[in-house]
Length: 123
Image (cartoon, rainbow, N blue to C red; front, side, top):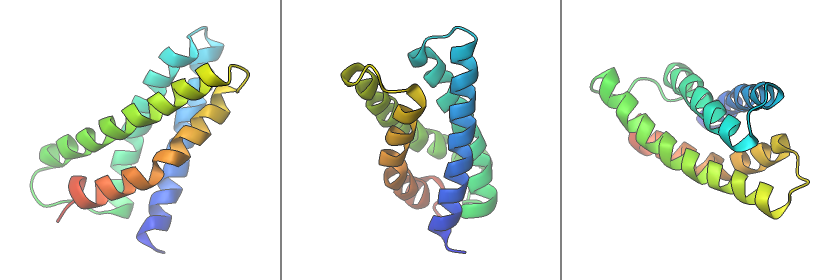
């Protein structure tokens, strides 16, 4: 299985974590923007562990350094993802938050693949 396909499958699982937590938090009364900040953070942790184990493998150096590089890429991509998510909700108020999450996440997929592969998990 290709590296990109493994990345996409893990990203799909990350999306399920993200969307599930988003839905739960909104159901519990959180605003969509607050709920999304929490759901992105949880999805980032889950995908880091799985991408490390399945997609890219361990980088050279310490796991702490790798986690720091991953966090830099993930935070940049999360900011882009969150910005797109918020823009969709503000521009199209009737858009369901889950659909806005899917659109923003899909738009960020190639950026995150390149960043993780070339920087976070570099050999």
